[in-house]
Image (cartoon, rainbow, N blue to C red; front, side, top):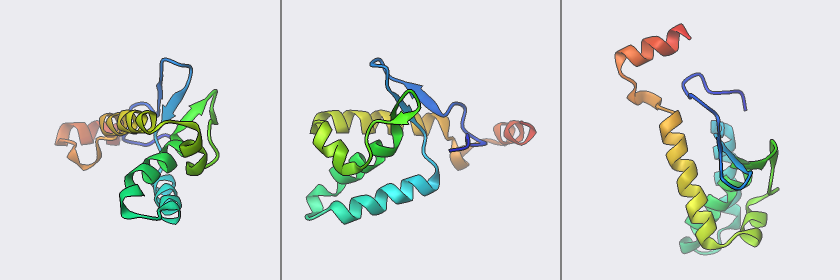
Length: 112
């Protein structure tokens, strides 16, 4: 993904040598679509969505650790998926201010 014009940094280093990276809007849509195909019962939706998101966001040395959401489900525990997904969401909110920018911050983005 090309770095966002609004985001500060696009990767977050984890303590174990892995990184989480921000995803493009297209990658998020692809993750959602993959999750929809995996879900068999409504209660599985959040876990499948998080696994598909992590399949795209979790990397080591710039390469994805997993090739699909199904691989994430096979390789990580429910707790690990939940914790990493929450970490990614917090990182995304911090680095992608979105439409909540004040006027001064918006002007700074335009200048850069």
